[in-house]
Amino acid sequence: MLLVIDIGNTNTVLGIFDGEDLLMHWRLISGKHTADELGIYLLNLISLAGITPKDIKGAAFSSVVPPLDAPWEDGIRRYLGIECLKVTSEIDLGVPILYKTPGEVGADRLVNAVAGIRQYGSPLIIVDFGTAITLDAISPSGEYLGGSIAPGLVVSMEALFGRAAKLPKVSFEVPGHVIGRTTGESIQSGMLYGFIGLVDSLVERIRGEMGMEAPVIATGGHAEVMEPLSRTIMSVEPWLTLEGLRIIYDRNRGRD
Image 1 (tube, helix red, strand yellow):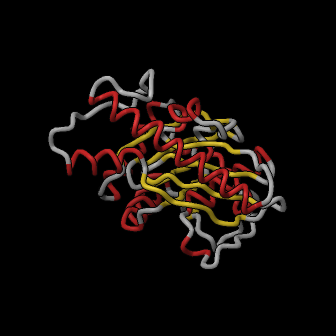
Image 2 (cartoon, one colour):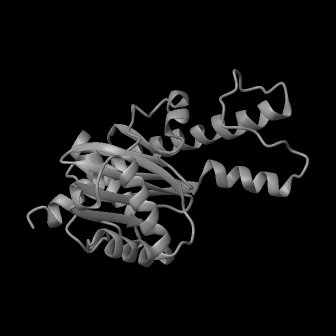
């Protein structure tokens, strides 16, 4: 079995694969923890899944939070006895990176590209609704071209509440109309309809630069809420990053 971990700014998502089947997955809050704390978390999660540490034969992770990398690697090494594969632009991804500075591309964006190409082919546009909203463009030849980065929903809402004390905090529920009848509905309308408008506009501009109608898929914590509002997103893949980590591990260490 394979343990995969995607370390993000807000959440850390873990999964366990048996071959190509995703058996279990968990979403944790990202934060500073010691290697021992993370090791204990892993052992507890594995136990709850009815799996023993000896069942885990490999591990891979992607991260956009460098200070958290070493504790995770050390915790996995100490408590599972495994050397974890770290995804970077320098390992064999099977996807040419045409970014001017490949080392600057977030590992999660590269992992999503690998999984997206495997499942949908190319050309392709991938939207990830995370701490930031990222859009990534894949050429018809399966090359990673680059994309766009915008503030995510949670970051934007926290900034709004931090600067406007009288505004009420609201949930990410889609209001029945764009013209809000209450302040809460007005905020929901501005956030959800506004941000999906941003995404659709960027998709159309990316398609224009690519010169083709590339299909669009979405992933990330808010993808399922946003997809019904979009005129460009055709499918949601909630565990795209985990799938990409599995593919990259198999490519780099599967033969070991």
